[in-house]
Length: 308
Length: 253
Image: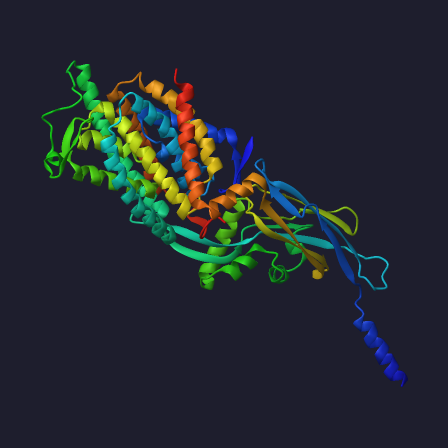
């Protein structure tokens, strides 16, 4: 069944849209990431204009993350205090990210920066996570008890000034690294059209040493707030949010996220992180190839200005 | 005196065209409405070649050729080229095409090169190259290269095309042409230019307009996104939050 998307100005198969929304929603429920880094490239590949894809996916990510965030909230798995700091700094980053987005688009280098950004970010984050999760999996196989938090592994980040107590995370740390992470994720997220959960989760785990019980919930809460703000920014600035496209993806995404969250309970933290690492690496390699391999078509064309 | 009369008569005879034809044509739809189930639309262009009003002729003699050019609303477009630099493929070269048609289909009753010569085709805006040359902002050499590629890319998107069997003659002077407008055809004013050729010359032409526009809910959404962007964005966010909450609430055991 075809449905006409009024902002993208083309018609697409309804079941295809709900289907990819559902598949990505499953993964986002499973890993506690928004799933934008999978959905945006999928839509662009299906023929949706890049600006509409990026803007509409932000709306879908809000929906996919809301149900997850709510269920984590009910279980007490969100550090609201920490999330507030991350969101406030994230919005600052997003404003700069949207400006950079416009600048690069007019220079014609947006797809290059997106590919390079995905390659560097996903590649490094994926490798780090894979190494760490394999190590801890191997350790637990050998019967070594792995504690959730390693008290003696405070790094230099914990020695910075302006310390704040985050009760739920059982942390007493400087706000500086929290703000830097927030600004960075806001910037990268709005530039690449992703929620940034896949950077947020490892950043919270490895840099701030936030305990595993609140990592995913806090990351989801931050994604919901950040993506809601970014959706508004896109709606006002580029006017390229396609509400019908976003809604089709949302319906699939929220249903998929429920199954993903249920499946996630069957797996251990290290296993989840290992699987996410593999997924992230696969996307990184795909983007790496697009930079190095001879493209199928060296020419491309695009309408200048808005779609209208 | 008689010589003068003969000369006058001769000049009158010469002034009268050998034949005068006019084109009577019609479109199947004057506006194409985009609704939620819009998945492209079929259109028919039909018409007949008749003796010109006021001429002595009772019938027209062919053979005729008909070419229909359907043009979409214009846009500013950019074509880019990637090159290999230090192991990475980068967009390095670009040409902008201003006021370039977003849609162009040429339907004809035979091979265009059999109907007339390339100069006539280009001068009447029948070949896509006529539009790339006019719209290009670059020098002629870059225009040459990028024009060909742009026309090819537009063709791959289904927006540009030439169908040399697109016009069918049902009798000696009655033709019909069918066109399927794709779902990604941009909304806006369209124009259909019809040319009648005889012995390689344009003997009649006509242009007709039609519009492709969103109606109903689709129009409401597209307008709100532009006129009330803040409200539109807010509704998107609320819809997302509600859908997310509903999904969670429904699936909670």
